[in-house]
Length: 572
Picture 1 (cartoon, one colour):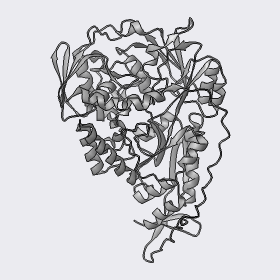
Picture 2: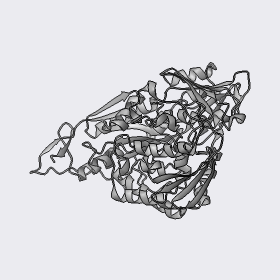
Picture 3: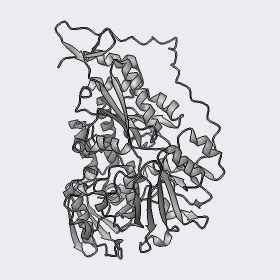
């Protein structure tokens, strides 16, 4: 393994992203959004063909397509996803389906989606955290090895050729060869339509520039990233950085959290061997040095003098225990990160060796930057970590901040760790996080100076109001995460690829971007976003909104409509 090859793979992306992460100039007042207008057929082109009439086979028995339920978030939590559900419902009902939109609390939606896989179709999202610029994570969301409960592929998509390429690209250190496989994978999954990227939403956030400056702005993460608390500079006597959002962690259990809200909080008081900088460069963190021996052997020298928050020293035994423990607990959310590890050896009192089962190109930039170090003396007695009651979850890490308080649904706080090796660079005394009931509460908190920065996007209608405030700085960065609609392929009617393709043609995603996002986003295409241009395949099937094509897909697959316009399928 050549460390330079790994770093180059990441740095290819930097020039594409860093320039986009700048505060915005105040925008002109935004006009009221208009419904998209259908384009007239140019006079020199043939008009589109009408769908052919579905043939009714005399010897075939037909039955109604079962009703489908779309799970989405509540309007208070995210009005964008909420309204998207009803846009989808309207179009699908025009195809003759019975559709129920089921808004629910975000944490409940996550549980139904990941932990129970109890859904027909769900609107959720993947955040664009910086380590996900490497395509490994987003590609893993369609890998068969992630289809079990708690895994990253709750829809159950399985394609042998996709799986073969996924495993091969992870072993490939030649960037061009890996790129060819990543592009092909995007082609393969898109025609099967297992999960649909609805849109990429710009990350528009804001901070109070009277209270702190020197915020770190990162593509995909905006202001709420792991570097901001370590680098902000107080401008007043207030030494606590206060953050606001309409959501809290699903759990603070590092062996059970599957949400961005959990991990963005956890990573402030747990250390990792590597952190990725704002410029997407791997920075040795708890590791003093990383030494690639060969393609399947990596030595890590542990930084000396580190302490757990209870005063115990951090040792190489803790490092080995951490990776062994994640593997033994079979934490599905991180399985693609620790899965390539065959074993971890202790070479001496400062050095551990990672022996991989096979070469894994993103090991340093992904695996070592994601797995939080755990204190062996606390966790080794816990047999099933995922079953811990909230009051029993350990909160001792070794990170730059120390866990202080968590009042569920209301407030969280951390205090700065004076014994951390980065403590001299931290100018604040700690971090407070206020949990609001909705996005409007967050915005009010920002206007009244109750919070210093937002951890969540401003809603489109709030942006021009924020731009009128002299003490607020608006930041807009592109997102390489995405909002998605995922079908449950284990359930009818989504087990039929023709049905999935038809329903995908019936997604008016341009309307979602123009009306719901006020144009501040981009229609979805691939799980690898266009802003991640090096890995993105711009030539995959687009599935532009077309109800005629949707009906034709159904007709070609043998579906018909009754006299009332209800969709019928051949009895299986």
